[in-house]
Image 1 (cartoon, one colour):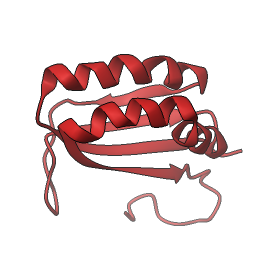
Image 2 (image 1 turned 180 degrees about the vertical axis):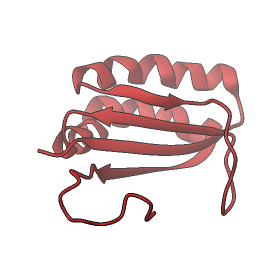
Image 3 (image 1 turned 45 degrees about the vertical axis):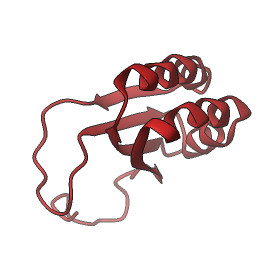
Image 4 (image 1 turned 30 degrees about the vertical axis):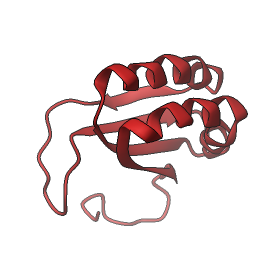
Length: 106
């Protein structure tokens, strides 16, 4: 079973209000087995328009990643995030390495 990932790119407009989202979402992430791989940090926008905050969250499975996002708890937490930030969240299934594609291909 492949892991699942959330890839988030966010511009936060009110850091203090955004903290309420982080606090509300934390237990929901833990409940679904989430592990933060990237949470902010230094970056270079190789292509396209960047956002100030980049986040990658790993889940035990793609199904767990979807379940977390669709959960009532996360949807309540999300309501705290959306008025104080702009961004995108993409939920993607991990690659198991079995299709023979080059590791260098994006």
